[in-house]
Amino acid sequence: MNLHSLGLKTVGDIHRNVSPEKLVKTALKRNEGVLGMNGALMVDTGKYTGRSPKDKFIVEEISTKDNVWWGSVNQPVSEAVFDELYQKVIDYYNTNEDGLGAFVFDGYSGAEAEVALPIRMIAKKAWQALFVNNMFIQPESEQLIDFKPKFTIINASPVLDDEWEKHGLHSETFILFNLEKGIAIIGGSEYGGEMKKGIFSVMHYYLPLKGILTMHCAANVDLNSDNPALFFGLSGTGKTTLSTDPKRLLIGDDEHGWSDSGIFNLEGGCYAKAINLSKEHEPGIWGAIRPGALLENLVYDEKTLVVDFNDSSKTENTRICYPLNHIEESLYAQGKPSISGHPNTILFLSCDAYGILPPVSKLTPEQAMYHFISGYTAKVAGTERGITEPQATFSPCFGGPFLTLNPLVYGELLKEKMNHHGAKVYLVNTGWSGGSAMSGASRMSLPATRAMVTAILDGSIEKSQCIEEPVFGLEIPTQLQGVDSSILNPRETWQNKEEYDRTAKILVEKFRNNFKQYSDDTGELQKAGP
Image (tube, rainbow, N blue to C red; front, side):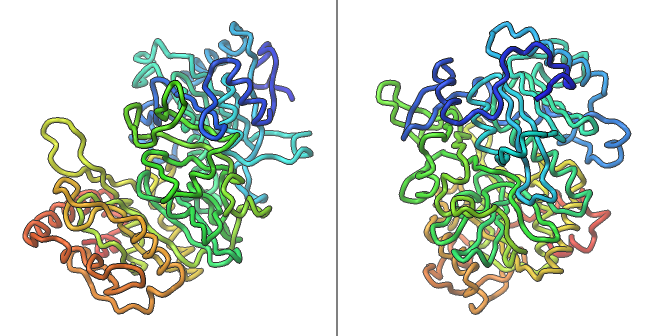
């Protein structure tokens, strides 16, 4: 393996595609973490316990200038700044002052062989090497003989940019992508998700330009590997939880592509949120915590090492990273590739803290496009003084932070594939019922939501009598097996109907204001909204 083309010449020992067992032993030897629950490695990611989107930049050059969706998500940086910081990263590796060498992972993004992207990940920390080993697709031994990466991420988390103001960056932390050269560099952040989502952003650029839709969604099939379904949703909406179903086989929990052949996972592992995890409600994820898994930023007892999954004092974004074969009910664990045919069913998951969206509704193709481009969810207001209502979040295509092209590119691809393959689309609200989050109302129960999802997947929802709710014009069932009918119509769950109407107007206005940015190009779609 030759790293000289990257400028890496004297990095000391290069540890390539090291086994998880050896990576864990090395991490423990170097005091990078502790061995905790069920033999999983537990680590803290330091200052950053989540992605740092303001520090992500893409080099603006001839090949990207007219393609990239420039703005707050994809901020431009010059080739000169990239080259300067790239050299700083290379110098950090080449000096090898710590004597630790480097870990290299060679593998793939994309389970469909025809479109898989060969990737190389370089890191100093053993736990970061374990992270990418879990998250990406493992190569066969013969594939490593003449492996040629198309994209490389070099993680130099201790390196800081002390001239960030001169460079036009936002802080001393930097996550810079050069799409033409096929290289990204990371400095200042240890958070593993930067590597995972970095490759996702890259796939969001390359594949749609070839007519392949990339999606921030989970996917699963029935136990016969048929009836594929997609679960779109932002973090905290239940995407991982609802797609990890003991009655179905998981394809993947977060990132997928949709080609002319069907659905394929972009990853080889899962990165599940761990906050409030319970064995009762999420047995699949709970069972994935075993040797080889990685627990990030979880609170545990220093003596007993017992984890408190309900403790968010470090971060709300506690995470579990594990390979797909840790989920027994997955295609990968069954010895099958993480691919399927074209989906019959698409679910949009939204955690509506306003309590206005119906628990489940059927969408017309036009409504599906509207809600896909909107990408709505809401978060409970924080404890800051003056915040008295939920915080609406609109993330186009349910994955705005990772899109590298204009959202309408992905929207048009979804529309084309939905129409061609006859996929039906449903909106599922995993948020609040009977009031807003600030009113003391309760969040939708997970068993009830699972029953609604089951009715969607087995087709029984199509046999239910439906009515149109007045706010968004959505078609909602009046009854579903295993679901209390009294919760299906959101307005009827509020004791104060006037308060419901007032809150609904607030939410509708937020939808309309958000969609104005797309009105010039999608005037017809806007009519499908509230």
